[in-house]
Image (tube, rainbow, N blue to C red; front, side):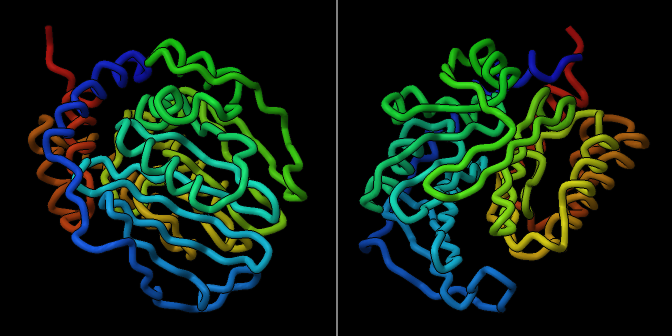
Amino acid sequence: MARSSLIPTALTLLAGLSLLGCTKAETEDSVVDSETTVQPGLNLDATQTLERDSGATVVVYDFGDLWVHNYNDNPANGIGNATYVVESESSLVLIDAHFFPESAADFRAYADSLGKPIDRILITHGHPDHVSGLASSFDDVPSYSSAGVISEALADSGSVIENTLGASAEIDGVNYSFEVRTGLEASEQVIITLPDYGVVALGDLFYNKHHAVMNPGFDGWISALGELGSADQSLFLAGHGPAATELSAVTEAMGYLETGRDTYATAADGEEFTATMLAAYPDYAGPFLLQLSVDEILYPAEE
C-alpha cells in the first residue's frame, strides 16, 4: 500500500492533539547553557538552549560565523517536529514549516526575532507535518524543494512550494548542496548539506530518540542512513527530536529501524509490534507516531 496515500489521511488525526494544548511557560524565555564537548568547526561550549513561552525549545549551535538554531516543537503536541534556522552574516535560511499553525507561527516569530531577513525556506519532504505551516506563516517567504516533493506536498495537503532546487546553491556566502533520495521514509526526500561546516539535514530519515513513522521499506532506509551519516560531520539535523552532535545518534536511529524490521517480520499483529517497540525503547518520545505506523501503514485495518 502506498505510504503517500496513507499519510495525509493519518495526519488529520494530529488535529486532535491540539486539544492537549500548548502550555505556556510561567516565565519569560530563559537561556541555559548546555553540556559541552568540542568538535572541529563547532564550538559546543557556546551552545545555548532557549525555552520559549510557547513550550518549544530552541538549541543554538555556534560555528563562529554561522549559527544553526534547532527549534523543537512543544512536546504537548506529541509529534516532536524539528525545524531549523541557518543564520549567516546577513540573512536566514529556514528548514521545514511545521504542521500545527501555532507551532509555525511561533517558529516564524522566533526567526523574525533574530533581526535578519529570511532569504528562503527549504522543505525536506512533502508530508503535511513539515509543509502545512507554509500557508499560515510563510506565504511571504520564497519556498524551495525538489520537483517530487513539490508534487507530493500539493497532492497530499494542498501546500504550495514555489521553486525547484538545483544541485547546490550559495546563499549569503554559505554553500549548500542538495541530494534527492526516493522511496525511503517519504516517497521523495531532500538531504541538505552545508559541506564547509559539516552540517547535514536528514529530515525524517533521522528520528532522534523518537518513535518513527515506519513503513515496510526498512532496509533501504537503514542503508541510506548508513551512507549519509559520516564521522566528518559535526551536526546532524533530525526531522523529529533534537539535532545531534555525535554520529552515534544516527547509529542508534539505525538500530531502532533494525528492531522495527525484525519485529515486523515476527510479530503476529500490530498489538505485539507496538508492545515490543515500546518495551525496547521505553524512553523514546512520540508513541503517537509509532501507533500511527501500526494503524495506518504496517497493519492497516481491513475494510
